[in-house]
Image (cartoon, rainbow, N blue to C red; front, side, top):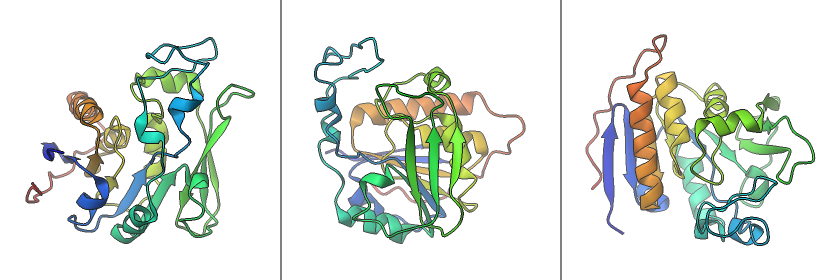
Length: 231
């Protein structure tokens, strides 16, 4: 893979394998990420979508062939995530309980809809022994962000997650379409994103550029990070 790096405002976006890249990064304040769950999303779509990016009446959509979701990241990746930051929020944590220690704090996204073909809610593991919290945000509102990735989280959900992280740089080692980065831009937080898929990397860059083009007048922009490029 040809590694690449883009600096957009206070966001540092890196195309590459997250395990390799994380081992070259300095520590950050927090990790907020949504790794592949290893549930074979493409297989679940068989008999639901048309397999070519189409949808059925229940709202399933293929978004192409999601080969990235056939397997979970391995334990080494989660070990590196837990080393690089004092606070971590990992969506889909219920799929990684064999990698992650027990914890009191779970964050829950309540999608405000019941008995839909997809899950009513999703869970994020947090390495903090404090009370669990729930964020109610309708799935229909989430689609207004302009969904370009099959497991894309709402920007407002990720902004809420940022309130559970200490001040400083936020890392998303599974950046996908860049939602965590967009949330950081809107909240004036420095961001580092890593993505292995060149197509989604380009989408993330474009979404983050657009987020900077529409700044929140009430949020002070962070100072741009002064770091040497990795590649």
